[in-house]
Image (cartoon, rainbow over the protein chains, first blue to last red):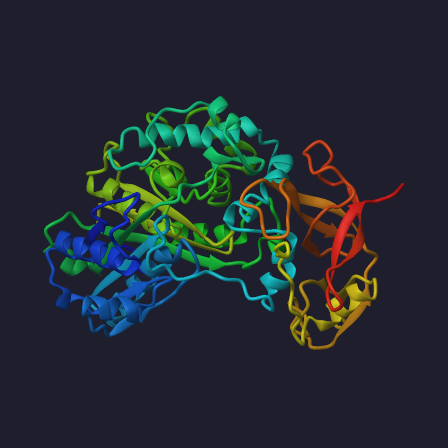
Length: 379
Length: 137
């Protein structure tokens, strides 16, 4: 894909985040979509492309009253929205549509109008994982952690620092769910969920949503908000079964998506001013830093423990507070994208001064999928 | 009221040989006749070279502990927390999820790379699960 041919011209989250007991899941989609459309200064009838995950595009298009000429229902978990951005950029460049709306929302906490997730007993997961007591992401996503720690000499204290540093970012963000400062000791003394991970190393469970509007860079300059250009993109999938990952020392999907985006963007790691790495659990930023090539995996724990990713550090990471402290409705990728867009617009609550390039890296399932989007505010 | 039971696998045509094997006290894997790749989970072709000529064979049942969590909450139906959910690396190469029995479910007792051997646990007349225990000797 060519650089900077497509831009984000509308971006918004749901009016409320957190616990939203007065809205169903599709209304959360609509709330985010209407906010993004207003942000872009558009009408619903201007939208001719739609992408969403979990909920179907037909559900959201009909609910909003949109008749699209381009549709993407890619649903690979929490990074689906990174893949939507990539696919939408390609579709806009190919002339399949002009103005794309990407929506995410989940009634993750209140569970109103939320579709059931189930694992059929005759699926591969149902036969070869479910019988051994996996029960929700906390019992599955951390399974690689002990191997990763042993291989690279990462300590429990270093991984705990992920949560500590992100809470420092969250403290600057009025919309973050959890803002009180925490220490490494607080993390390591919080309630055990699935050893080695404790409560403060697991994401929040909230309600909310977000939406993005993309159009060609040529049109983007005529919109009310500062355009945020798509500089590079990448995507991949590995396996729906965490037990069948090629290795627990790395994510193959990360290693494809991340470097593909960097190559497409034509940038090096030194060019990155701002970084989002989807943190459903505290180990993901370590995997991301290593697999995206910022540093060898051996150095990721020390890098974070030394404070390089906290406010004032040289690589600001998860500046909204992340899934650990900002919010996590189930598919967090949209919120990481929203924060990258805010940073590139220069309006983030914890704004990184003069940031020009933001890397936004997502995961789907338990390392099942990955998508990376690199944004810039300079064309 | 009966206790909630653990999730029960339902075999498909492609996986039936595996579940027949556990019932017969054998851990069965597949090997590609063309490229010798040993793989899991079951499928009637080689995921490495795409050959449809593959053979089922009885694995050694030996392996080592690759990684695990000790799940405290929420517990799956049929499990009493804390319990370890483990990934075992078989001597033949493939890895599989399982549980570790005859061993305290603690970080001290569950050492990465410890040697394990398969143990079969009968769920009912049709399904026997492959679990693992610390290898003797």
